[in-house]
Image (cartoon, rainbow, N blue to C red; front, side, top):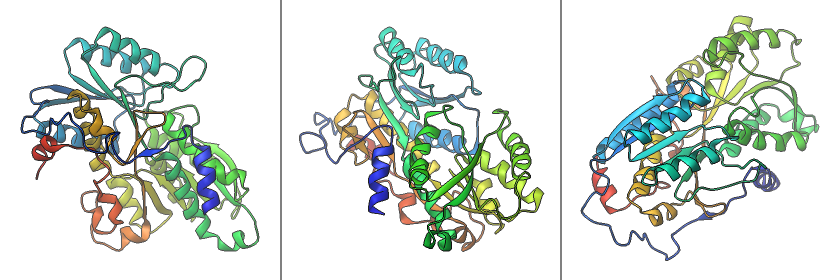
Amino acid sequence: MRKILTLLMTAVLITACPACCSPNGNNSVENNSTESNPVEGKKAAYIMYMSSSPIFELWSESFTKTAEDLGMEADTFFCEDSDEEWKNRILQCAKDGYDGLLVSHGGVDYSWEFLTDVLKEYPNLKIATFDTSFRDENGETKTIDGVVQLFQQDSELAAALVEEILAMYPDKAAKNEPVTILQVQEENYIIAFDRRQAGYQVYETEERIKTLEQMAPEDHLNPVSSMQEVAKNIIGKYNDGEIDAIWCCYDAYARGVYKALRELGSDIPMVSVDICDEDIQLMAEGKNWKACATTNWTLNGEFACRVLALEMAGQYDDIKAASCYYEDPGMWMEIPSVVVTQEQIMSGQNITVKNLSDVAEDAYTDRSFMPSCDWMDSALKD
């Protein structure tokens, strides 16, 4: 395992080093730990490149509730997988006087230049990003002053799922035989999938797994039904026993794969990234869907809103003091991951994302990685 973790660290797109505290060793807010709320009355928005899905609805609800608890107005905009809509919505919100924007899943080939230009035109605007990588025309990693980039621990999500699959086939491991995987993956589509590929690929390099082929939906506006049709056609090409497991980079795609497997009457096990109520219901059937690697989507929106609010308040030292902050490359934070298994889901009654904490690891509901300060703690008290 030590070797795997070492390889994973070299495989991720950015080598990072967590900062456990701010440079002066305290929660420096310029001692604006006060009683006043510097974001009260301000306006924020969550702008998502992709179409709406259950996990991003959870994100939106959490973001909105946190913003309202902090005394802000909040809106959500989904951009239906359109680069132009994503850009136009950001520009429109900037023009309309929003104080802060949480923008999600921007393209790697344009986000750095585009957002840099937006902030030149609107220097008082604050922006935080999720699953949005900054690179220049030469592919070099960049940062934008004042913009915090948020990600899940994507490489760890991917690796945890491979480990779940490997545990299903101990005999193959004993014989040094690779486990055969049909991979649901889209490279060069969104940065999160590429980061997950980095964690997955370590196991290919070590020849512990063998990828039979990759598959992805053909229609991104209807990912479940499209993935069901694609998966049914591809799985049908293989003989019984040729596919050991199916690894899915995203739960919306996984729902399509699951439906295809049930339609085919197949018992091939599958694992996936992310979780929502529908995923839980399908896992609870006790069939193919064996595990999800995820973060807590009911908390992710809160985390993003906290970061954006601290940007808007100019309290970057409080952001840097969080345990999930990385000094290299800077302005970079990652949400810790956890695995939720079918056995855990089936151990409880009527499990949903709202009571998943009853059966999941304690890490699932941990908030200790989130940044905060006195006025924010006061505003967010239950």
